[in-house]
Each structure stands twice: as structure tokens, then as C-alpha cells.
Length: 117
Image (tube, one colour):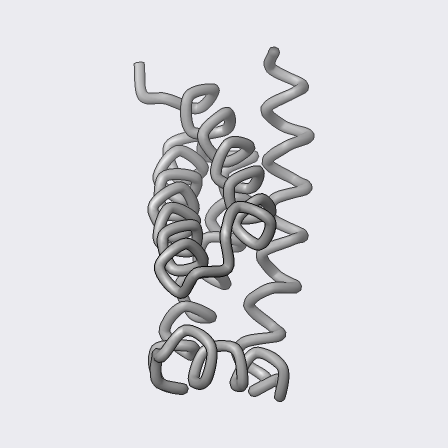
């Protein structure tokens, strides 16, 4: 289980570096999704991008300091719960909410694997 958590932690860190870069670079597709589809502001997109970047950094630091990985994975769980809710709220259904749900479950595995003892 220890290595499973570490592998998931590394993959999530890489994924969230990419996701945060897409948001923080002002990717046109992200801007359109946040503003037109979801009804959020561009500023909110940047806030989510910063949160994802900090979580990705925290997961990397978490290899040496497991407590940081615990908190970072918890932030991802909360963020992905919001993403699932957003997809369902705008009527996109579970088809679009599946990826955030899978990421939520993977982050939950890291969260539980790095839980404070």
C-alpha cells in the first residue's frame, strides 16, 4: 500500500502541475469553460489554478514530509468535489464529471494513505 500511495501521489502531482499551468496561462479553452459554461469569473479560474499549483507542490514536498501530502491531498479532494458538483450543476452529467470524480478518489486514497497518526 505504501508504494501505491507514493505512485498515486507522484501522478497526481504531475497532473495538477499540468492542470494549474493550463489555468494560470489563461488557456482559451479554460477561460471559455469557466466563464461561459460554468458561469464563473476568470479570477476564480486563476484562484483554482493557484490552489492546484500549491497542491501539486505540496504533494512533491510530501515525499519527505507526509503531513504536507496529507493536507495537499485533502485540498484536491475538496477541489474535485467542487468540480464534480459544477459539472452536474450545469447539466453536463456524469460523463463530464467522471474525470474529476476519479481524481477525487485517487486523492482520497493518498489522503487516507498519508493520514496523520
